[in-house]
Image 1: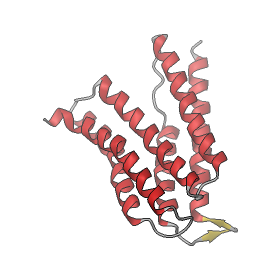
Image 2: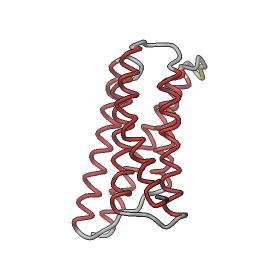
Image 3: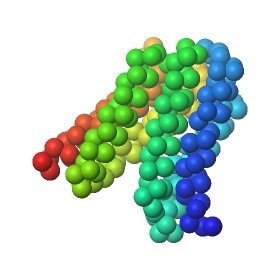
Image 4: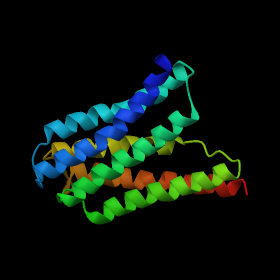
Length: 179
């Protein structure tokens, strides 16, 4: 049973995505607190940390688990940002850029894998995921804090976008360095 826990955590993140989307669309508000979907997203985001940590600690890492973890992250973030765009909390260009980066990097890693190369996750990629998860929370909780005429949620979303592209660049650099 212990060996299945990391995969079940990733599966929870994956399955929570449509539930959170449903709750976002049901509320449909451009502002205000979204406590229930924020709570589910908070728990789901932490599963990203714990599934990897437990898999390494218990030495139960599997190819299926690594795939499930990667797919769960991408579907989780993409689904929620699509929901944010549909209810008017995040501009469509940010959502398109975030999702495009995810597909491009996933394709690059697939190409590298077909060539027998492994592109290891970087610290910047982990920061990207953290900022994406934090931005989801900030957007849902709708904190009314402004810094230099920007809402705090907007700042965290921009940081997620910036780190997404920095880490994407690093993946491409790593891939082409070994050509």
